[in-house]
Image (tube, rainbow, N blue to C red; front, top):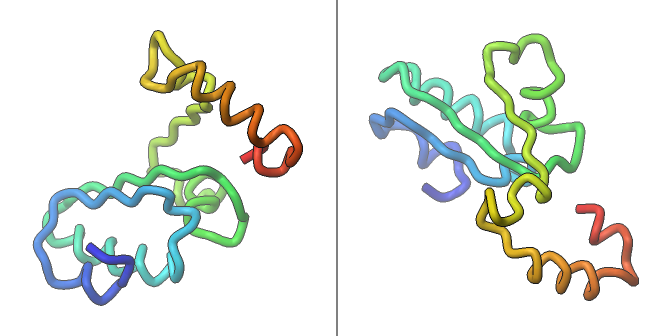
Length: 108
């Protein structure tokens, strides 16, 4: 579905997965629409993201007591490196070399 609360309303869904949820525009409206949509099926909401700002639902899921019913898991790029993950070490090194002049980009 496009990033639009209006398009998420109406369908019967059992699972909604939002990738990079920290970066979704109007995330609060989208989350509200998702909750009501999943409320008809007792469905699950899954979201992943690179943490970025504190003024978003993704941050609140991690830090606000009202969201304690969420299960959270923190995985860094180091956890995703081969041999236990899909991320190739040579790719990470290539990115590090390309971004070395801009520490802010590497920090992401």
